[in-house]
Length: 237
Image (cartoon, rainbow, N blue to C red):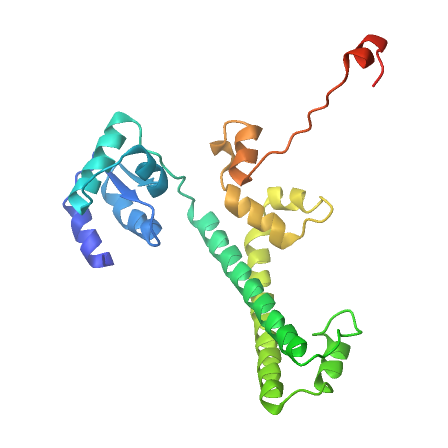
């Protein structure tokens, strides 16, 4: 699975060939390398393939035969392949999410240290702003815990710098998108949320209806109103 080996394999194929691969961590890169040599590269959803085809013997040859048979029969569950710009935006959004999660984990560790030593809740709104840090520096904790808190605070500052850089890159890659600008007009939707939505959606025309789009993101809650027969007869709500 090197670029050179994949290019050599691609040269052995015909322009009319179609290639099917399962979705993995590097499937997009594999698809980009093989696409110039063949008619089409299809990426299969491995979970749905597993649900459709149950094999008693699992080998690469058997799996390849299963993918080929499902594709030939028109039953292969495919995943949508994003364009290069959407794929880049997805990577940026994923990295931002990882930084935010890491920052939250570090903050929780600081709170856990204070809780372990019976330190009362910080009187300020944010423990990690200027006033909160000044209060934190005066709390009676053991020296090793103090060192740990200082390391965590330094890491938070580094993560804040990373987050600023990522937000700048996300803005550069998405502010020219009219769909992102329209989403920003919704109360409570900031640039990170709007860009994340558009990165997940990609080409919206791939959804046949609004209901398909809603289902792609998760449950679609509905309200069912029931009225008694007496209410119906009186025409009241």
